[in-house]
Amino acid sequence: MADPHIELTHQPIDYQALTERVRSPQAGAVLLFLGTVREFTSGRQTLRLEYEAYPPMALSKMRELAEQAAQRWPLTEVAIVHRLGLLDLGEISVAIAVSTPHRDQGFEAGRWLIDTLKEVVPVWKQENWSDGTQEWVHPGTSDTATSPPALGP
Figure (cartoon, rainbow, N blue to C red):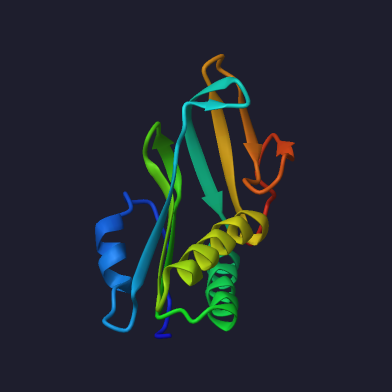
């Protein structure tokens, strides 16, 4: 596997470019996962989400995940991009693209990457509800807080 593409961005994610980035003549499968802002969560209406991260730690963890996935599956290429800032309904918050020799490997690797990213990467989202309330959550847990933990300087 070449050096994985790992990125945090405040700009919209170009998932077509990300897909092209992982395509390879050595891969028979290219898988793309897009996480998007949905309107309803647990029966509550969402207006928008805001994502924050501690970039040095988040980027490091994302790179570790790509390397761990490459040890478990024969990845040809991998790219992981997470968006930060305010996102409206339907916007893409995270994209994971992998290429592998066979489709089963790609599906397994992609699923593991998004599930593990949500558990271990320090990215928090603030739900902005239609009733005017807000709450911060770490996407991989049901924990809520009034703000993300203070990290770094």
